[in-house]
Image 1: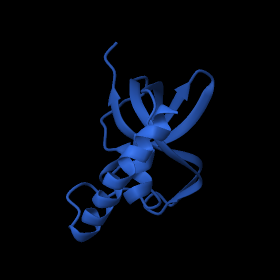
Image 2: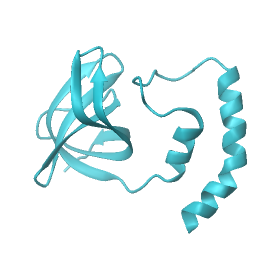
Image 3: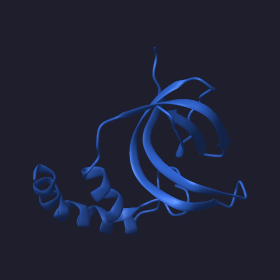
Image 4: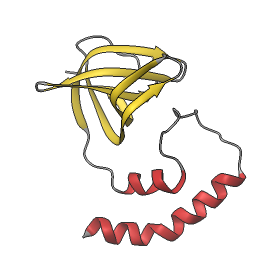
Length: 126
């Protein structure tokens, strides 16, 4: 219920922000093709949940992005984040964004069965 009220309250501001965004040149890093933008991204941000922790199994760095294979309990999954310096065994914390099935990275020439885009990924000190 609180999320619905928050979304209803933020909706007019989101429309203004989307309109302004479309008139300005981008000032931040480029997101992977298929990553939510504009109003969809703003609405998803309003619904953002708690920070999630996972252990890094492997990573692939490309310009501006890091693909992270992580383990949560017994579950292995792939994440895409803005570039982040990690190594195998690091504990990371992140905020989930959207998940895409059969995501193809043209840069890597690879298709991920499932790829979750994340915000604010960073290594947690133990």
